[in-house]
Amino acid sequence: MNIIKAVNILRWITRVLAVMFALFIAMMAIGQGGPPNPFRFEGKVAVELVAMYVMWTGLLAGLKREIIGGSLLFGGFAVFMIAEGRIINGLGFSPFVLIGLLYIAVGIAGRHIVEQEETE
Image (cartoon, rainbow, N blue to C red):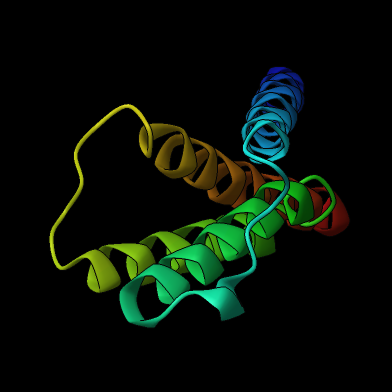
């Protein structure tokens, strides 16, 4: 029973972090004059913008479907790094990785708990 409580606490911590980070990104986009249109840019910048949108979508999708949200976060992050041509190591992208890991961990743990309850 304690493991279920721990998973639920971790699930809510992850959701709060995701909402806070999604709002932070939205606030930055609005502060810059609205979300940028990736079709106005060329090449690498357009791909990076689409990857950012995928990561932002992953933050929100993970609120309902943790594994899908975490996968979108990692997929968008991978595309961004490939487009950038190098691994960016900094605080700006750390929340994407942390929240993605937490989403996937909570999603897998939640499925495992449900499967165990069904067999009992």
